Image (cartoon, rainbow, N blue to C red; front, top):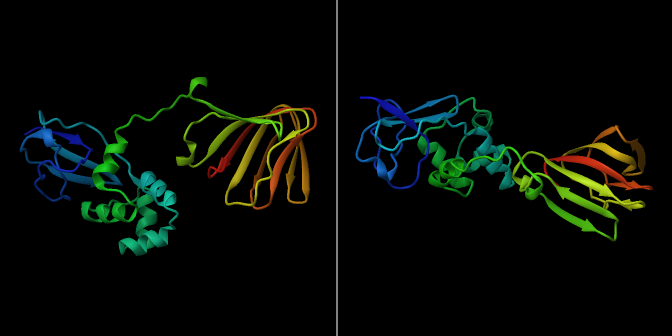
Length: 236
């Protein structure tokens, strides 16, 4: 029999016969075929008969587990405790260095507030790579004299968040309290003063800056400026 690979695992459907791998499920439209589920380096490979509606695809799940964990505000140790696993296993899983059984994956996802069906169904949404001006979101603060353009929408789910910042003459950003993470910027136009706690640093067109956001910080421009600004994790 010829087999194909299928990665989506919605609820329902016929049980895949377990043959040396973890058990999975066929999609409901696949008929009552038998197959196997293999795992390799964090990638799940669901194999089923040709003609059963399966999709040939591999999936790396580590980064998605990590993103879900961070969204829930959990450390690796806290997630491991809830799922009755070791912190080392969670660390390896998030780096795609190991593979969980289906039962273990179900336990982990339950601790993260989702189901295995939802987890794999979400992956089927095509990832947007290129963003155009119509995707951007703009917010103007006339009181502070700035305009922020979010150039990657919904970046809060990512590891970093970039914006384009325009400062009017005498404009500034609102002072940001200390928080976790780091920030990077590149001055596209004008001159700015970066305030970090009690320190000040000047940067002009063509200069870049980078700092840990562990002090109150904001940016001021006497004559106006344009900046590409990135924070990790997202905080704008």
